[in-house]
Amino acid sequence: MTYRMFEEKHHASIYQRYRFVPPEAIRDIILHYLERKKVQPHALAVDLGCGTGQNSRLMAPHFQEVVGIDISECQLEEARAVAGFNNITYRKGTAEELPFPDASVDLLTAASAAHWFDQQRFLLEAGRVLKPCGCMALLGFADNFRLHYGSCGDRLTDICDEFKKVLLPYTSTQVAVANTKLQELYTAIPFPDKERIECIPLKQQISVRNIVGFMESFSMYQALQRAEPDAATTLLQRTLDRFLKEMGVTSPDTLMEVTLEYFCVLASKPE
Image (cartoon, rainbow, N blue to C red; front, side):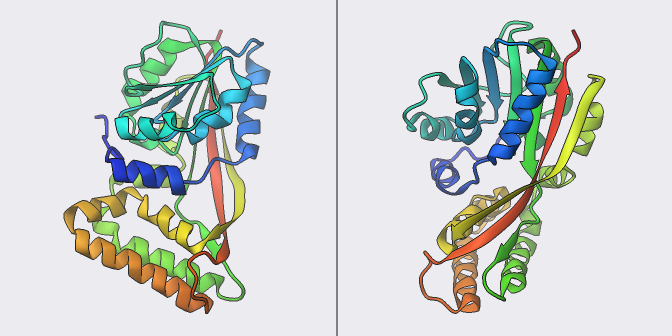
């Protein structure tokens, strides 16, 4: 089945403000892989489940054209509102039914989205639209990120874990798929030339306000928000207050450090 998530306007705006942009290191891994497998020109990259366009914009300087595909018109509105990328277009659609001719795409990529795809239908469609030696790059991160601030980093991370524990009844099985680093999908890719790179680090400064906004963007939090809006609001505010108290600060603009580990599944279609 195709999963429909993240479609509300409020959720899309949260995604635009608070989701992490994939690190440049992972962009470089993808481009180097494509260079090894397929000669120039690199004409068309398609970003599946593009959301508000973070990954599309990361790829834009390296392709003649980038097309972002997402099921949510609200997400696409946020993406289109970012100026300065004249070679990106955004279209409503799914990863399982792509509006491209056979053998026309140089790169199919998806950032923190492939775990929502219908695996079998997506792989058939990928095999259809990719050019010979065209590449697939599916990236994401597990949800075991860590927070650091002075000597209280472990306690801050524990607060995150307790937040996620409250959300367990609202957590889709597809989140567990992401946390396996797409193991089943990787195994099912029919191309013999494939690899999975793990433990690609991202470390950055982030405000307390923004880490709470990132947590608000979780699909399971949004599920709680729809089911029990008062409980969801209380949980988010309590989490913010606990962070500030543990850090001994009053401003939600206080910076902490977050570390995550990305992974990337890479595959090249045979000639």
